Image 1 (cartoon, helix red, strand yellow):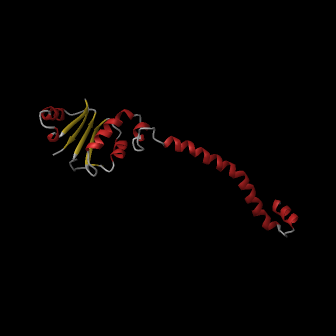
Image 2 (cartoon, one colour):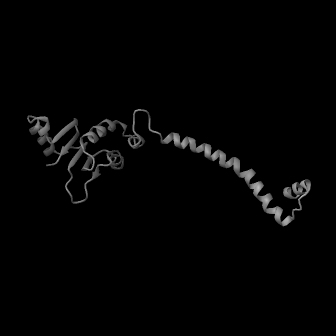
Image 3 (cartoon, one colour):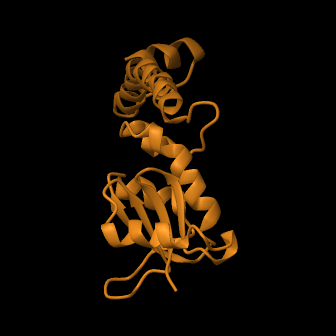
Length: 158
């Protein structure tokens, strides 16, 4: 209808059959555009929520999201000590998905394969504690067990 009126004002011969799709497109655009614009502005809030807080890496945000931000210093310490491409195994209270994400390109040891490193965050077995005590007399470079906290250890397997 609008197209027919516009065509009549401009002197264009527009038939009703051609006018209907034009009118429908104009009406839908007029109604849908504000909704799409509002939805796009809403995505700004989502993007802001995905940003890591200052002082934290993008991968570390996973620990913040699961409420384990207190583990980030330990995870950073472990990451510095395990070389890229090495395999590891995790035992303890840390979220395994977040830990793997932060540790990349280091990878989980395949099932049935011994890891090059074992990470303990929580319950540390007695034999590992005994190994830590026994190695305290060795030079730092010869030790295979490193301690971050009371129940946070990194073990380099031989």
